[in-house]
Image 1 (cartoon, rainbow, N blue to C red):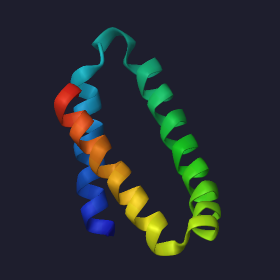
Image 2 (image 1 turned 45 degrees about the vertical axis):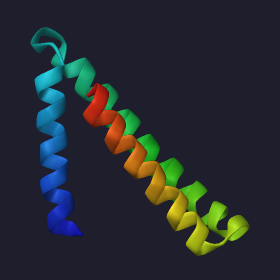
Image 3 (image 1 turned 90 degrees about the vertical axis):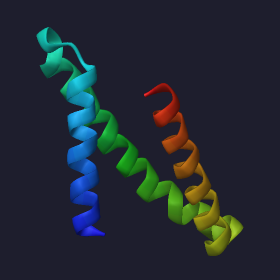
Length: 78
């Protein structure tokens, strides 16, 4: 996971750098960092709570499906 996430993270960062305007890069990267860290925090709090309610296997399937949908949306509208 660590090696794969390192490559995916660098690819995501390069994708963001390609899409944002050069004259306002600092603000866009700051927003990206804040949203990314917030999503990690929320996911680490909501994930276990959801798994406790609907079951571990169902929660994993739900989050996996959400990640596939997010990937499709990025490819489609990216």
